[in-house]
Length: 408
Image (cartoon, rainbow, N blue to C red; front, side, top):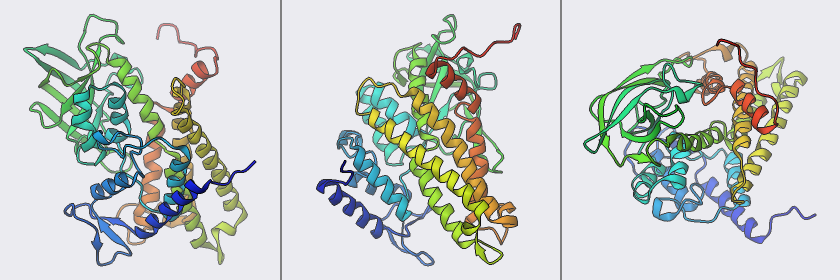
């Protein structure tokens, strides 16, 4: 069996490797103008605005590779090996990955699958290019795990949707220009049949956003209140009252995006570097058997996760292949793996690993501590691990349903 790349892929690998070398040490100017990169004092490499980097990656075909060009993508064919090469070279060289988020990872594929031509033309390009930020209006105070119990109301009055209600745990709402939101438009229909999927501009009068500080000590979530919010009738994906099917498509893309294997591999490489530099009794931590054993267990899980990711990727080339359970597995194992990985880094740093925020002795800007807490939240968010296990067991393995408590 010949497992070597053919000439076409070797040439592509060389191209990606040269690209990564060119942008080695790239950092982002979050507050600066959207200009081509230039040398910046204190930086080891180029500096540019994040959205400029996004456009470069799309133009090269290193991101949004199979999204049609007319919608702002590269317009190429899906290619498993090229996707693997891109991920591998970016991870190995520590080149920054593309922007993600709820709009890019969740709404764009939903629009490609279910949106109208007008919606695709209007929303996909600015979203992919990082010019339009989205938040997700799903959970409510009384509708979390049982999402179909949501009560935010939408009424069609004189050609406009009038929305009243509340959403909670709304990530990035304070930064977003748009929200894809589930509202109940058919109050007399069964709960799964009375929901519509609406697109709401966040600057519409009647919207109030209140930040919620989470366990990272940052306002990562928000409460969002809608009071007589009016949007055009056409701001709906799918048919009226049939938003549950659209919502489930979005949830499928969400589960596949919360802990992507390539990002985990990049983080693993950073962990290995950390363990080579941190010492105990004069020896690098990576040479201590207990720590090395924990690292190897995590490394094995990362490799398994990458193989599973390739299986999901290959399934996209076979129309009709159902990968819903596979994405749930990725969400379940991926979020728990990232929490374990970040936790090992904290242990490796010893007492310094307990520091947080503005301590003068903190390392790597406190990203290990922040992401450790962040992924503890993601084990709960996007469908808790317990719910994922129930669905995988019942729908994927055909096991009996979890018994319900009488009278509950």
